[in-house]
Amino acid sequence: MKNKTILSIMLTMIILTSVTAYSQEKITVKGSDTMVILAQKWAELYMKKNPSASIQVTGGGSGTGITALINGTTDIANSSRPMKQSEIEKLKARYNTLGVKISCAKDGVTIFLNSANKVEELTMKQLSDIYQGKIRNWKELGGNDAEIRLYGRENSSGTYVYFLEEVVKGDYAASVQTLPGTAAVVNAVKKDVNGIGYGGAAYAEGVKHARVKKDAGSPGIHPTAETIGNGTYPISRYLYIYLRNKPTGEMKKYIDWILSSEGQMVVTEVGYFPYK
Image (cartoon, rainbow, N blue to C red):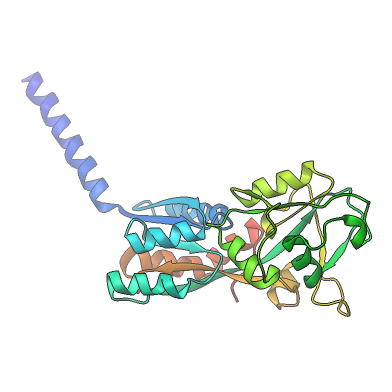
C-alpha cells in the first residue's frame, strides 16, 4: 500500500512538471552584444511578472542573431544595425516573409578615450581618418606625441558595420584590434593611455567620452539622453528587434511590453534611450 502511495505521488509530480513545462512558451533571443544587457534585463523583469513565460537571451553580435533568425534557431534577433538586403532576401527565400523590424531603443555610438588623454573632441572626418590609419599620432589632434592605438568590434557586430558605414566610410586600418564586445573595448582603452575605441554609450565606465563634431565648424557634442534623443549627437542610431513574422500570443505580449512605458523605463535604467 505504501509503495502504491509513493508511486502515485511520483506520477502526480511528473504530470505536474510536464504540464508546467508545456504551459511555458519559450522565447529565444539572440544577437547584438550592444543590446545583450538590455535584453537580459527585459527578460528578467518580464518573467518575474509573467511566470508562465520563458525567455532565453544570448549575444554573439547582430550578424549572428540575424543568421540565427534566418536559420530558424532563434525567435528574436537583436540588432544594432538594419538588416542587409541580402539577409532580407535569404529570409524571404526560406519563409516567404520580409521579416518584421521593430525599433525598440536609441543609442549613441560613443568614442572612448583614456581619461589621461588630452584630446577632448574629434570631428567625424578625423574619426574616419583615424580608423582608416591616415592619422596615426595624437599630436596631429592636439594630444601627446604618441602613436594612436585603435580598438574596435569584430566583424559580426552591428556596431562594427554601423561605424564602418556611417563614420569610417572606407576600409578599417589593419592595425585595428578587434575585440568581442563593447565591454572589452572599454577595458582596453581604460588600460591604454594612447587608445581609442567606440561602442554603445551604456558601457562607458572608467573612460571618457570624446565630444563629436559633425564638421570642423560645428560644436562638439557629448552623447547624452537629450542629444541622442533629438539626433544632434552625430553618431546616433536606433536599436532593433527583428522577427520572422508578425508576433502573436506570448511573443506579442512580450514585444508590446518592451515598447510600453515600463519596458522603456528599463532602456533608460540600462543607459540607453527610449525609441520615441
